[in-house]
Image (cartoon, rainbow, N blue to C red; front, side, top):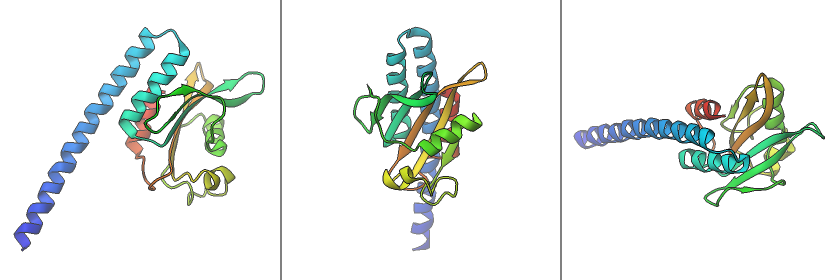
Length: 174
């Protein structure tokens, strides 16, 4: 009986190690793909759609949004949206946590919340409860020290959907 349990634990650990190494390969492939797209695409809309598609392959997020700074209103406005497996498309209206986005814009630093509903930074935000956001990460799109926009991903499923390594990758491609 003990041998069976130990063997099952060893197999589970092997599978987890294999998954992690596969994930690292996926991450490198995503970085390469996005970098190649940056150099080959002159159309901003196509680039944003491609970025959300590649990030979805990696993270399987619920909602992905690229928001850009609106110079007239000085606020972040959704430009490209991807919901689950559906194709990314231009959209100007999409529910997201403005509190999380505002935090990223204000600090010019990426943010990860593994459980927004219990995270003291975001739990009081109406959008977090209203849109049932559990796990979210958001990274600034920067140029010459200025925030031009953000990439926002969230999940309404389980808490801890995103990990620190996920945020590092999102930051690298942003």
